[in-house]
Length: 306
Image (cartoon, rainbow, N blue to C red; front, side, top):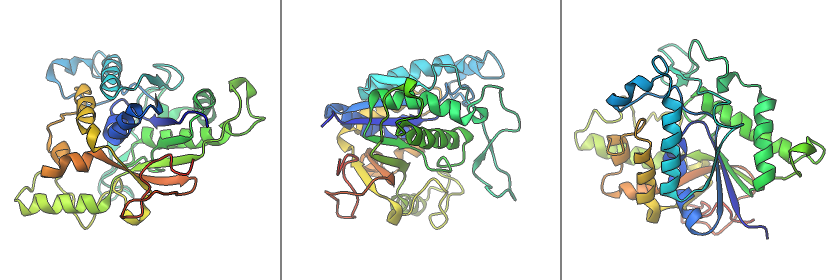
């Protein structure tokens, strides 16, 4: 069989380490090929480092270059050597976002900003962006693709667009007569959407509230979870990356302008935080579930059945 290869499609630098950092490190360590495609430079991100505040989009507008460095450092921490920007760095710009107000159909979730840059990813031509990814798919020929669900987890327009581009590109790449100049056709066997376990989130939230912590995850109700959380019956796979938890945390720290790795968010889970963040969940969007399964009926390897 052709060497196993995993392709991940993410919207901004740091999304990959949050969602699948442990999975990536585990597969690299096992000799499986890993390719990351990042769709934008993350130019509109919120800067957490005061001395770098001048890089913001409304000032020097140089954050994308800094996040390019951070992504390279994160990939070094995970051991990933093949990471690329869709269409080349700078082709598609971070679209930005805003939080939907009360009364909006997606109140509390992210929605597109009122104004976006002319080359923002959200405004990209779907076929053009998909073609940029088709070329990558036909080059690295992955058996497994990981991206977001149709809502992008929490509504960010770039996450939604990454889902659309990845889904369309996977379809186009498999058609022998489509754009042979982009490479020989390749059909990806299994497609997954990154997910977070609802039962784990509920358990963690309840422990926080019982301990008297009402500030962390403010407004998040264990009985009314946000859309980025997936009910367990809809999960398809879990990758146990506990042995690579430290590598994941190192990758998160590398994204210094965006992430505070010692924040309550990443301390979530208390004594079992390594299990909470080291075990990464997925919904299966294409392909058949195949064993071996864990005690909850979830695949334990994204390559099961291939």
